[in-house]
Length: 475
Ligand code: GCO
Image 1 (cartoon, rainbow, N blue to C red):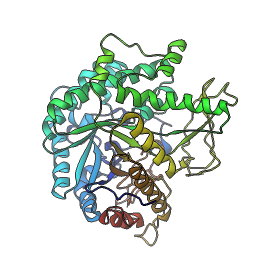
Image 2: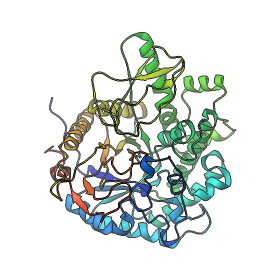
Image 3: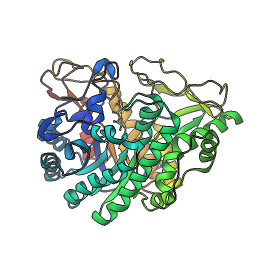
Image 4: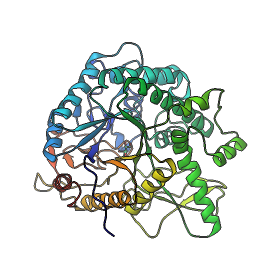
C-alpha cells in the first residue's frame, strides 16, 4: 500500500503542562493551585515530589524555546496556570502572570512555532476549591469563563489553537473515584456530578470562544484508551462494548454530540449515580461543540466479561515495576485484563501503535471532526551517560511506530492536524515523580535535588529533528 504523505503545514509538536514544568510556584503574585497544596501532603505523590521548582521553565523558557527552534518544532502545546492569572480564582487579573505567557507566546511566534494553548491542565485555584469545591459547584462555570475570556481577549490575535479541558476523564477519575488527585474523594455520585459541571463549563467556554476568537479552533483533550475485547466470546464482546460506552463515549459523545450515550445513562440512572441534568443543560452542551478532538494517546485497554463480581477500580502503579497493576472494572459491566499480544512499559501501560491508528479512525468516523494528537510518548528511566548523552533508542522506537500509525490513519482518511509528542523537556509526572522521564530534552534533577537543571539533548531530540525536517518522510 502506498501511504499518503503528511500534509503540508502538519503541526509537528511537543507538549507540556504548567505544573509539570514551570516551577516558580509562588512567584510574581501567583496564588496556590490545588496541586501546590496536595503534593505537599504526606504520601500523596512519589517520594513526596512536587512542582515547586519542577524544571524551572518559568525562568528558563527562552532557553527552552531556543532548543525548540533548533529542533525545528512547528507547534508547542503548553498550559496556562489559572492561579497565575487569578491568584484567588477570579477578580482582577494578575498582570505579571499574563505577561509571562505573553513573552512565551511572542518568543514562540518569533521562532515560527505555533502556540497551542491549554486553558485547564488540572491546576484549579485552591481558593475556589476551598470556597465551593471546584468542579462540584455550578459557580465554577462563570469563574472558568471569566478566566478564559481574559485569555481570549489578550491572545486572540496570536493563538489559533486552543485546548479547553485537558483529560477531564483521567483527572476527575483520579480526583473523585480513586482518591489519587485533589480533592482525593472516592464517591461515584460526586464523580459524575463534577463531570457534568465540567461538561457545562467546557461547552459554555467553547460557545463564548466563537465570539472572541472567530478564526481560532478549540477542542478538549481526551485521554483516550480505546477498548479491546479480550476474546470473541460474546461475554467479552459485551464487556468491551460496556467499557467503550462508559469509559470513552461518556466523555466523547457529550463533548461532540452534546448528549450522553444512552446505555450508560440508563445504567447510572438505575444505580442512582447519574448527574442531575437541569432544564437548559442539554442546550448548553449542544451549543458548545468543539472544532477538533484533542487526543492524548498512551495505550489501549483490554476487557473481559469473566468474573465481574467484586472487581475494584484501578489503583495506580506508581512504582515503575512491571506487573504490579491489579485488574480493575465495574461489577457486572467490565474488567480489565492483560493483553498477551502487546508489550508493556515499566508502569504497565500497553505499548500499542496499532491502537493509535484504531483510536484515530474511531474518532474520525464517529464524530466526523479533525483530530489533533495533543500527547503521545513513553515514560522511562533514562540514564545520563558520560555527562552529556542519553541513548533513548527505546523512545525513538516508540515514537517512530506511533508516527507511522499516524501516517496509516491519514492514509485511511483521518484529518489529522498535528502530532504533539509528550513531552519537550523532562517533566514532573504527577504521581510518578521526576524518575519517569518523557522528554526529548533531559533535565538534570531528581526527586529532591534540583542540581543545575541543565538541559541535555537526548538521542530522540536529534531523531525528531530529522522527522520534522523531512515532514515525516524520514522516520
Ligand atoms: C504522568 C502522565 C502525565 C500526563 C499528562 C496528561 O506521568 O504524569 O503521563 O504526564 O500524560 O499530564 O495530560
